[in-house]
Image (cartoon, rainbow, N blue to C red; front, side, top):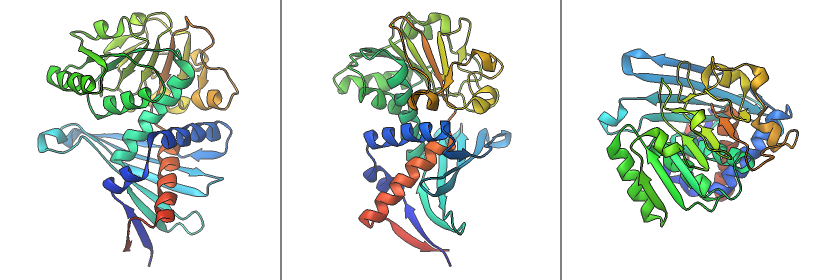
Length: 320
């Protein structure tokens, strides 16, 4: 009978800090680019009857001896039931025996690892002196992305656009309470026009912004598209550098699906974090990162939290 360590949402949040997660995700990107980890084919399917998207992402970290999967997805109508739209759990297995060893809340995991991925990309691709950021979308991930960027950049002003004006207004007020300038844009173009960093976090299936709106030197983190048919960004003018997490995913699930060929891609992010290819090279470059979310992000952070819980003797065990 297997004993499984359970790490709930509260404990997960106690055990992590953003800097450690960002370093963990950056290392995971590099290891993957160097064939030191394996990402298995992902499942990403619509559940039409319940307005949901179901997902399975799994991977194997060779050196850490970690293997696991995240399952769940995004249920668009959950907010009507008082629940968050994103719902998922993470399961770690013993690489030696295949037995389950740890079950973790993956709502918090997904939020922080996605924010960390965006921060890592911006670290290498955005102007170091970036002071203005636009958030396209005003949900949980928009908040997480902003928190990640605040760890790296001397941000002064945030502009928020959301199709739901009340959501944008709430986020603007939250940002002001942090001591930052914040304003609500009436249109997505108004938000994008003069920002150093633009972050899209919507579940849109039709473009919300155009790359031709980006100013010289701007960086775009496209974080929302992770399913066939989703699309937040119209690539009507190609950025100088287009980077993704994994071409095989981005070309089918991300912003790049149906919009450009492999030849137009500058790099996968692990090639940049691993110093195989450069990040930003000039102040005037327009750069873009297309994030679809890799299983190694989930697994590397989950393994880090699992080990920390073991060291601190936290969590509860259940018998299966």
